[in-house]
Image 1 (cartoon, rainbow, N blue to C red):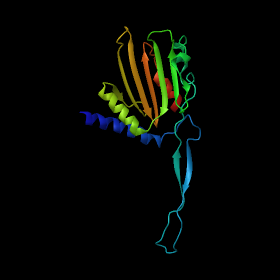
Image 2 (cartoon, rainbow, N blue to C red):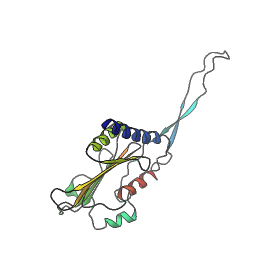
Image 3 (cartoon, helix red, strand yellow):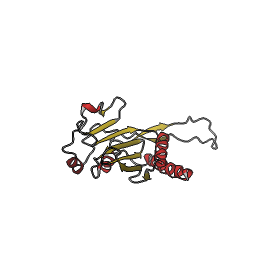
Image 4 (cartoon, helix red, strand yellow):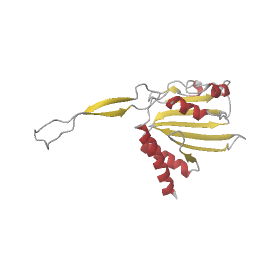
Length: 197
């Protein structure tokens, strides 16, 4: 059974990696550079044909956003209008030293209500391992928006609220959101649209 799951996620991640070579990264203008590949021309015989220089497209990595508000739609921001963002009590947030973006929505005085999203670059192999492990923990994984999405909700052990986690992987970028009693409608979809549209 696990082998089937591994194959399913591997296929999904492979599809998203393959799509990285086809789909442009909208966050980064001028999505593809061209680097000439040349071969030396030696020999004069007609049968000694050497390929002429060709241009090989190189896709730039998808850029990690730098602002926690700009990645959300007006509709999602309206749902978060009274929730503090990146309070210092929660530690480092915003653009971190490694280039990732960490967005912490929550009041430090609240016992449980909050939402934390980290957006970072992740190699496909590491993403595959992470998503497979989540399937073993009961997460539901599927392949929307040219990527792979895994999610799960559960009851909080200490409070009568719902907790959850949603991950989305595409083109070397992982969006990882964990929340408790705060799940704005359309939140992850808005981030996906901001990065890739």
